[in-house]
Length: 127
Image (tube, rainbow, N blue to C red):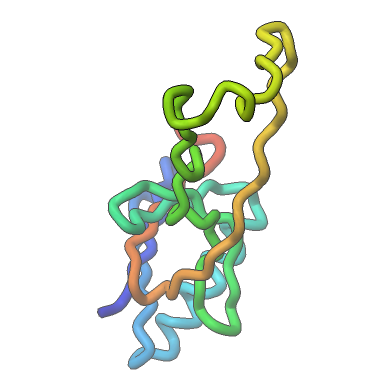
């Protein structure tokens, strides 16, 4: 399988590049395009594990996209209900006026470019 990079552009139209290891010229064009797009502020999206995921970076040495690891549940493990825990172990009641803490930024994950279809959207796209 060879991954594809769809570049959407209002001025130049639609362009598709492939991460095909059997075609070194096309492979180098795709590497340069991804690097240039990310540096210029374009947003790249890929469908990975059934979810649309934003590409954060690209490693040209391994031909891999760097994404936020979406395999973990954002909620974490299920919390016990009040009936599962004795009342003495519940601790203090949460303050409803407290400012919520910001969550951790997830781990990053590497995904081979040859395995996914990616679409780029320029930051000035739209009508």
